[in-house]
Amino acid sequence: MAVPGPYSWEPHIGAWAATVAGAGLVVVAHRRLQYASGERAAWGHRRMGCFAVACVGLVLALTWPVADLAAHWSLTMLVVQRLLLLLLVAPMLWLGLPDDVLRRLTRPPIVDTLLGVVQRPPVAVAVVTAASVGSMTPALVRAQATSVVARGCIDVAILLAGLVLWVPVIGRLPGTPRPKPVVRFGYLVFQAVVPAFLSFIYIFSRHPLYDTFSGSWTALGIRPLTDQQVAGFVSKLTMLFVLLTVGSVVLSRASRADDELLDEPLVWADVERAFERVDRRRRGHPVGPDGPVLESPDGESDADSGTRPDPRADPGPGSEGNGSRSGHDDRGKAEGAGGAGP
Image (tube, rainbow, N blue to C red; front, side, top):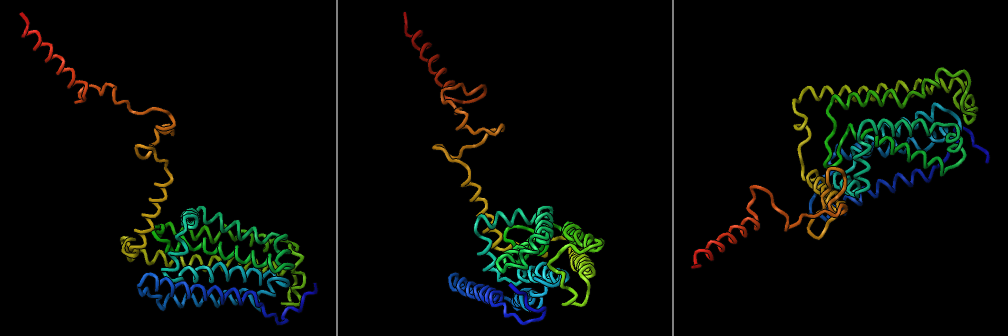
């Protein structure tokens, strides 16, 4: 299939349709949840603005000309596209979703459990690194250049990795507090350094790594090796600047509040989600005829070991069981019988 020129117009109907459909589904879901609950849960102007920015960023990243240059012509533009998804679309989308829609999306047990795992800073760093580096392997770069389906799947994976990157920082997961500000700052430092280590390979490599972008001179007027080195600088400097700036803001806000709970008041959604998690854990334990079966310290339950309390067993010294009462009665009867004799 012949590749059109670097700046030939392409409508990208699929990307437009996906963006419009996704935005429409969020609006409709918010309206329906309002109607079902009978409450007028406000979708504040700030959240609406963040959601609009996410939609605009999605269109910029996935349509002409960025998407075309990123697919066939320039590694720098591919890096710019990935940075737009990671650092703009993902955080604005997570910040912009209405509260009721976010609660409904994260309520399924598998989603809630998965988000609870990936919001841990070490797990989040590993997930973002795997997605960022794995998607830039020569095989996947070649696949996204030749297949629209592969390109769409990789874009979705990068967007999900961006959500994983920002969930520990932004929070908003019901029933789950954010890490402390110092922890969030350290987490952002790691995210700025670890996933972007590939940029050093781009900068110091002596030959181009991707045959896909051999036409960079036609598109941007720079050689493929220079395009690769520029991509490395753009990736590294952008990640450092954005993430460290956000980390500095987190620390500056923390210095004005002695107690983190003052910034994150407890709401009913947190309590409700906590009860749901407790209920799921409780349903996960086996229940016997006499109530829940508890596990012994060695990991074996009472039902599995076959040991149950014996009501006829000696209750032990100091107890007031039936055995001691019957012993006193027997002695009393014997004394009475002895007194009635000749």
